[in-house]
Length: 216
Length: 216
Image 1 (tube, each protein chain N blue to C red):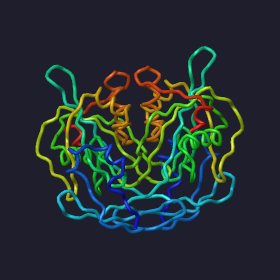
Image 2: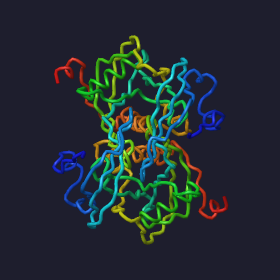
Image 3: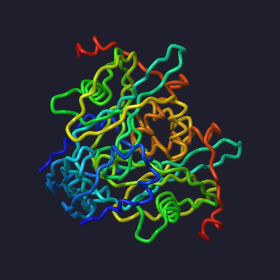
């Protein structure tokens, strides 16, 4: 049984006492299957009205997404993006660099590693933006959103079976692609919301030097 | 075997000839499991370099999300939102109304139905905004994004086992919640990107009357 801690701090932060009438409580849990990628569970839960119901979901280790900013000599900036074929949706998708957490890795270490492996870039400064739950109906997945700047180019190290193109675009181009349907990846659309508001100085970031982050 | 049509129009639109070097081709497909909600497959694919790999994914019927606008007497607008406990992430989430397509239902019919069932509102005007792929790494799910306005209140009809609160907020409040981590649902963050750009007149919508849409 996959146990859920009812005193989990995340829960207590996420809803106040006034939301208690919405909460479902775990009664039992069963592993539905363990694939090479997908790990699925089926739980019985007590509904707010006392009835019970079934909930099926995928357990995911968590992931990160990086919004890498390239400063141009004229003061403008470009973002680093990827094109990757995504088999589940049968399309080449435009995305910000992203990847799953390895065991024992911090979210920032993962952000650093994925940026370097997929694009070759290392960043001298990082800012944590927020988190994103991509699929709350059936996955535990949470994606940590990071900005990276002061980039230094290096060589890529793609995973076996990973094929992707790296390119850069102006923020205005990316936003146009979000509007016209060229970009439909959910995490990248959320990245565009962050990018637009950060560049407009509506949302602020707390930039940290890489050497400071390394001490955590 | 779940067959993939290589001449699928969606594929041909989504990538040009220049992206062909990224494409993976289905070799075989096996149902991994059929739960009450989750339907999973494992396919063998040919990679761009000729090697083969395994891809596991959830097959999803598709969904819609509605961004409902309430015009106030003073010309400002509020959005209709929901609070719902999402078991997979163990939290009460703030979300735009959304739901899965029923068999034989058009995306607009689904948008209309979900808005009415979950919030009680009917809309006299609708605009299709775009689509969103929430989880391209392991699900076929696509979410159609609609705006709704000229709302008339009515009574809700929640599904069995569905518990949610409906409330309204100013667009500025919603955007603040996206920035400060109160809103982390991916589809709602994408809805906020649309809302911000539509209200700023940066992105335009093609509004249709409900009676016109009904003739399709």
